[in-house]
Image 1 (tube, rainbow, N blue to C red):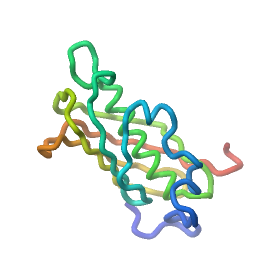
Image 2: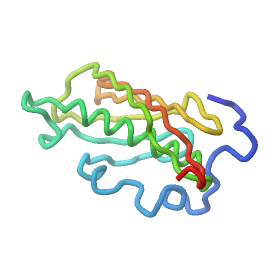
Image 3: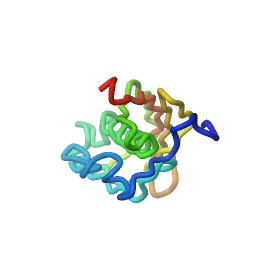
Length: 151
């Protein structure tokens, strides 16, 4: 991660926190469907708790891989938007998620951390762990920073 962002970049300075930085609703219907409980939201770390509920499972009774991808991209996107703030929007352009351990209806904690941030892009890594702290999924998301002229 860049220790010192380029001039004019850095953590969001939105006075009202996450809602002001990325909209009135930082989740939306899809994220509510996933059952994500965002327990920490910031420009340098995002954490969520969720459960592999039956409606998120594939026919074999384990959490669908697309759910892991969605959780990972959601956390990375929220963190990226918090960091970029009111300078514009951020959009995911690549999501590479590995499924390490099958989970069923267990509680899962996912944590997103930035590893690279520049004027034009960000890269975030996300790890999802079960209550025994075993790694269940790990992902890397590259996001593009869009300025108003690009939107």
